[in-house]
Length: 291
Image (cartoon, rainbow, N blue to C red; front, side, top):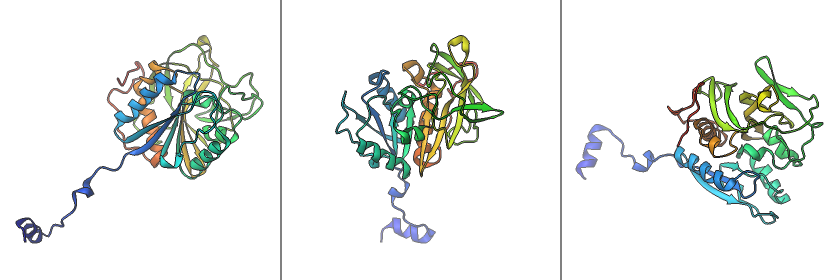
């Protein structure tokens, strides 16, 4: 018997394989791009870098073909999180059905910025994202999310449009669900980098928790009300994180965008958030970059 085992026997310790101390496997995450009215060739590499920098994700990319999406069929079940950086032509019916089943059965989904413009005539997708804009959506269907007191509620008043934004600018985000795992530890107010502030998003607006909002100033071409910009939605057994932030490079480089994105992706995958709030997170007075 080796000295190692004699010492273990004398001390009462148990020999444990070093594999027991190995780090948890990384969360498998798929970014979908390939069509977008925004510059996905610039934004996808930045999104990938954000996720990899977090250290807990194994990132893959599925790029839809230009034009006809026939044959585009990612194997969603291979991943714990699907991140959409896609706004383009409809996926094949069988791909849409597979995606519905994936999320309904417990898969995680993250919708980034213009992904909430996509698939306006896909009812289940609209239910997943809660509210969306453009894409043929009608002001006579669904509801806005409008704040009353301290809560966002469905507002079925008819509007003149579904989806709008004024000039790009920095704007102040207000945390609305401070105890949610994604937002826990974040400041009540923080400045977001130059971005499009989406307004008048509309949809089924059911099973939605608004995590953060921003006031859309009329002087900037906005709606004149608080607009929901970070949301989570329950869809069957699945969880969805919807961020309306992230128009272009300046917005994506914001440490507030990156932090909420990675925390949102971890939460939809696992139901918890283990990531600390970075020391360079924006303040109410000043935005900051992660890079």
